[in-house]
Image (cartoon, rainbow, N blue to C red):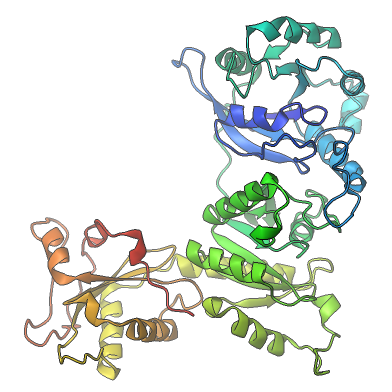
Length: 528
């Protein structure tokens, strides 16, 4: 059987997101006292330990949902520009229904400190009648999904009597826990272990590619995911900033599996309204970090802003392959600039290269997520970037390339000291990482390293992804390599001239030894 799914439902601000984080034992969902923070379905795979720690763990997918009923608290109905957030209520409740219909177990979260409210009674009635998210086939078959009440915010023993009062909802003795004080956490997880069925089949295979979709507010990120998924898997709204968490959506496309990570739209930090937006920024950074390729979306109908530039820097610093996507081209293609000239893909590309100089290596895709224009081609391009980032160049071939570059133009030095490169090796992929072993790294100026990087992109098979360049002094490397067995011989050029012997292959150089004790700031990017 597949991994069992648990859907957490309840009214706003009862601690559903905190409960998900407690079960997952990591901060997956945003937790904030503001009702209505969670809007999309947030899911994660958790491992529940055996009560005695002697049996097998049970994997389970836990899904957090938005608060059912009133969307926002009093005074929070309108955002900072006056848009009515209550218009999202139907979309949020649709996501709740989808989560329930796709789940195996339902956890009904109720705040024991507030007691049973009218909203709780409404939700309980819907769960008893299985009107919330049950498919037509399940209704005809009379199939009922198990529902368990979770008494949240039971911070100490004095709240236990109030927690047991929730039995009146008609779903048996409630589970009890507190995400804040961790009171009865172990007891709750032990009982949850008994509730969750064992997954006897092997876990699903990993996807072929994970893409993080990032961009400023209202760039069309969620629209792209829905177009790929072929369903309203993520809420799409004209209200800027609808998505708050990073949402994973698994998609099968042309025989390949993709996990698309939708992220919150960002804006300038000084414009952040509350702590929630800081959480959203952190989620976007984490989404980029765990992705294989980044889809960086620009709105073709607006100018590149400071937020776009900040996001570009965040992506470049992550060293991830990136596709720059110009979205909403269906709206911008007939527009004209300030001088009256019609906008064209070539002119827009020139504009991007001028404004985002640090990303001049990245390919650009013109797209419309709304109409589907070039959506498939963009995903194919992302797969190409992933393949480039995983390419490894042979050491002999790499050394011949370096020799050719040095013969054309070597480093210059005012003191007359000759800069020498003894050998080169690609030590890692994702990103491709090249180590040059030299006589003195200080002799290689910033301008010359930039020149090297530009030449690399002309001749190497990974010219459209970030390349990491590391300069190492020869003495440090030889010390690491000396005495290693089974790694092959280290062949160096003539001791006097420093010239390469390109006929000698050094494929078996210990790549790990080349990176020992390498500080993080040794990564050099020269694309600006």
